Length: 358
Image (cartoon, rainbow, N blue to C red; front, side):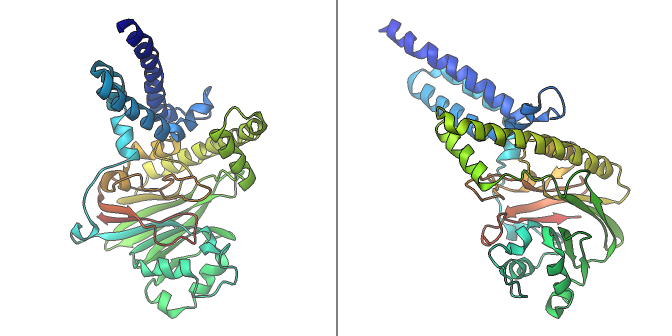
């Protein structure tokens, strides 16, 4: 019986060791810049939920069958504890517990104010009305049609609430609605890309807040490509979908390389910023286990990792569920409470909302 037990346990242990290594790689592989020799490492963070779940299942298995085996998954989980808590932070408190004074900040990719679902745009647009209803102090928007923002300038109920509105330079880009004076705004265009970053200087009482409202390189995957890739993941032995999945991975590698360069450019500027306070926010199109996230996390606070709880999914289309929208702040700002509001579904993103003490 012992011999039969070893025949079962040893192969399982070997598989667990491989899964443990893959979990560690999924957490730390993305730190490598995708422009180097191992560009695929930059996508490793996308596999984190899978390998974490498998190691957790092995932990349960060993607890029930062979307790010595738990050392393998426990070691892997402990090695990955810091990235895990950035991906899935645990802060059990409620918004009302955040004591004054604070400012409420919103970062929201509106998907063109949900124009795909609301083609006859009027001032009653549900995404716009929802955004205004949040009554935040500073609202940073991505994928904003210039025509929509222009219309808001003529609506008294909006301008009375947000007297300072930064209009995007392009046709569809980033914007800001603010209760505080906007001293300066500039659009930072990315090379060979339709994506960009809105740079703002905002007067908060007597101090200056510098904001980088980013929309980093989009993946631009077509729906049929995503469908093919999802089919391949479900049935990897089906060769008919293999070619399509390769095209998806190739596109992801190209876009993550572009995002890395864009993130480094913005991070360099933010790192050398002379304003007292700094916020970098927006649609990063990357998870907390990515190079683009890492370059900001080195010197700024991720407000969700510091004061949120759970996975905090912000993108919810095509059965792809990730936190790819982030708010970073300088370390002289204290994140009090950060959450994702899932009540408005006309956009393919949910907003990130953070209460910050300056």
